[in-house]
Image (cartoon, rainbow over all chains, first blue to last red; front, side):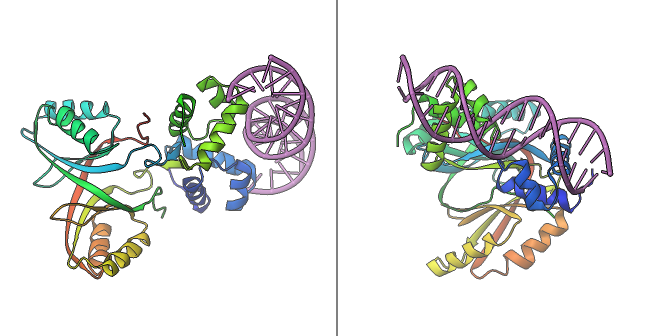
Length: 154
Length: 154
DNA sequence: CTTGAAATACATGCGGC
DNA sequence: GCCGCATGTATTTCAAG
């Protein structure tokens, strides 16, 4: 599917304000409400828009710790990875799990915790007990310099 | 500010569907519309809700590459960090920039690119030319095992 | 794509509990 | 504090140009 400059502006606007009304969105991009809504629906249908969500504040929720957890696996068999994947999906503290290239790690997880005690508990009782986990390394987030909520639209 | 179980349910619902109407939200959490809207406004005001956004699909936008870029700085002076911070904020390809603990890296950036050529250009012409950048290491994302869009609400 | 109109759904405020 | 209703507004949706 091909998108034009109007679609791009729609995506850019919705990325910044997901609750904007169709009327105002149309006004901002310079179109009347009808075609604007049609485009939005088409973009949703085509999968450009994956969903709409409220962004919450981790601090306010008492999640004071954010950790980048690197994990290396002992044996690289498909079953090991599948079981690991399934396990982390059941852990709400894990915000993101990426399978990455690199000699020192296979997985990189972004984890939140209330405090060091909770994180220690999570690491020792839930992660290191998973089958196949050979090594772990925790990098603590000192500061979130930039957290862009939007993708570049070219 | 203290939140009760209704507020938590509101946050959980809005995290999953940021465009839900107040009426339906009220129905889902088991409250009537009036107090529900009052709570939503209060949660926004108190900073629990940081905003509402559409989540877009990187693949559909032609961003086929995601890279975890680790950067170490040569001198750890405040000015260096400030200038670096400002520089990455002007780079739309950088989705996230974290200052982290660890001996091998100071910053960790999450970057998207259309392809390897674009990434190479970004890395060589924009990152390594920044003042203070001593070393870089790119880890390519093979697969996004989990990308949770929601924080755990306890 | 635009305009305009009709029907629907919505947010919001108020009195009562 | 919550509920339910009333009211005015915003929104979607459709048809015609």
